Length: 388
Image (cartoon, rainbow, N blue to C red; front, top):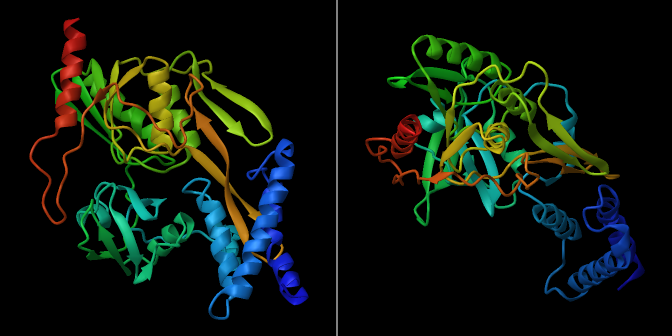
């Protein structure tokens, strides 16, 4: 390898070294020798590529791919950010007001965790589990959740085109969505059956806790002696709001454990005045239940305040921070994650339902089948508890 090539490799390998140091994700001190061995192999691989590949190699492109690969191996929310994306992350300017109502994760491509009720995405028939292969003709194979989420935002009334696949189908569907404002209401309520209130939490935001208290009070006045809380396709939102929601239902106990790199594990417990809602509850969950909704569900199940009916949740309960690199690029790294009250991992593991019921499959472009098997099962569980 030429001295010039080695200088290039050392310069562009600096982010790898920083990555190894910041946060300790590649190794702890006890594995330092293994880390150096990996870096030596990395140096050798880059050298072999530059000297043996059939055509001239764009080393910047190779290194960019390596950086993406390193962060992709951590979790779907961690990402390598370009200098332009770092500037976006550091900007204090709010995101554009127009949204399509999609929350994303990564699984080879970008994948939909949930499409919010009544959003442009939901009205177009997009569902949990759909793969987003392109946004405005830009492939998502090497696109981070950070980048994809921002590409979907824009001015109110503007349009964005997404190419999606469902299930094992190789047939792409191109859908044009018109960006809209986020609805003002996150929570709705109604009586599902005599004595049974139904609370739909469609999203978690700044108003959700107050709206939940108000709707439960109205349902109690209407005769509700138990609650069904629907958290299907409820994704995103401030994780602390998930804890605030749990405080409404749990009077005494541990709500969650929080683990941050380099900090002792934190126990988040109830406080005086918590537990103002005492009605027994059943929670409806699916693979689109994530983030704050998962933390809320975990707290209630862990304190025996509710049962879960539905599907295994996705396991997405963590926060990220930006670590800047010398060349202006950066790492968007998961540095804090949550565990259940019983100290089992929640992030990347999810919650197992008490009663497993699958959401029905729907072919693209077809209306969902009549009926709601998860809600029917939840009503059955409420009736069994009453009989007992």
